[in-house]
Length: 376
View 1 (spheres, rainbow, N blue to C red):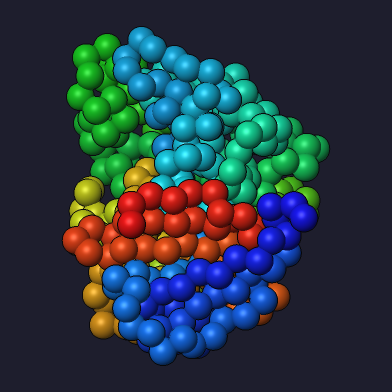
View 2: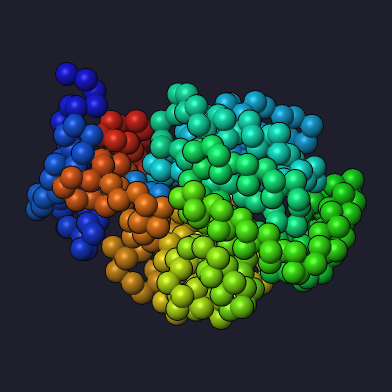
């Protein structure tokens, strides 16, 4: 019998189900699927919590793993393997690797490098978690628009996000803020970022809106989930939704988040924002949006460990609701109806977490196979 078809039993002091929690329960896995979720009555599992494997729709840390230090670059397969193992340690079993298709030397980004990462994800060699592609398009950059448009012909992209990172737009109030954040204060890179900011600011608003409309319609027709990014106000949300956007990532204002909710688009906020207790840049506070009832899901953004930590931030909601925001809801939005919940018949992706003193994954199971174990 193969390892994948063996019977596996995972117990926890708390087991989080779609409907609530079991105090003392176990998950029985057979043939890569969940066969049963049942109570045991034993509250002696060291406080461990059993959750569905986390589903991360936007995590761009793989780009940073390619450039661990200034001047050093590792190959795409090595960077992806690093991201894969660290994702499991963070409880993520389904990972949408966010890859920026833009030529931005100040951010160590290039269309060539993005294409290499996409190929590595598509090949999937030696990966343990389920990896998929989230292509990021900078609509102020014609080369980025052309590159992402060409991806429609290649069925390897599951999500595409459309963004206009430019001074005076979204989270960048002026050229100084843009240059500072894009270059992280580094000398030559700051000069490059300032130049890029001036070029991007020169792209007319009408051109930005036209590119968003054309790309969103083209990608949506190809069954790619289309996301807008950093929507600043309701008008930006309306324009995006009317042209095929179904996911609004990181709205800058509560008004934008409310409009996305009203229009039936899913709203994603950054888990680091919620865990930290606010936006780094003075944008919408994720907790404020949660309290307003307009957050459907959380993404790791740039810090994978924050996704698991967000589950244990007390928002006044039941644990099952907080878990759903990083499991079943992102799975639903991405069209992955086979995962994200501990229920009979679902794909057996699950993690065991020791919540104290810092939420830590002690076991991870992917498609019924135990792939990670750490600690007690």
